Image (cartoon, rainbow, N blue to C red; front, top):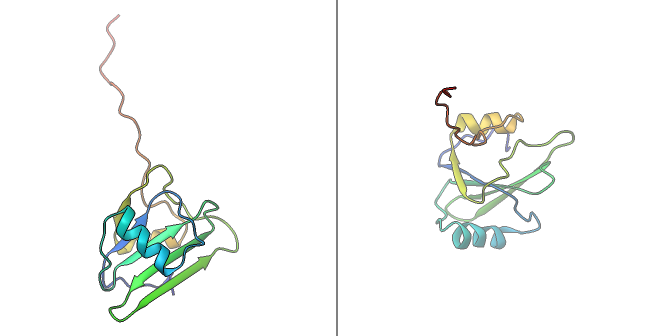
Amino acid sequence: MLNDYRAKGKIYLALGYTDLRKGIDGLCAVIQDHYGKELRTHDLFLFCGRRADRLKGLLWEGDGFLLLYKRLEAGRFQWPRTRTELAEITAEQYSFLMRGMQVIAPKIPRQNLAPRIV
């Protein structure tokens, strides 16, 4: 189901590490308290643990929550680790993530590229 999800709402990645032992109530608290977001109908929130071989998805369907869990048999998700914020991704980026591709490029520090005069 996670591979074939067709977004009716927005898709968010919780960047960095999340304790995947949390259930629906714990993940709702992370979304509301840590990120300051409200759960809206058909918005999908994705969380990844330290091992990066498992994902949890939380989806509010208007009348209840759907908790999704995916464990890869081989390989890891290319999950952004450096930030602890919420990132909105497109349906296309979501598809790339499910295929093991990196969807958010790491930021490269900007260097002074002015030519040196010797």
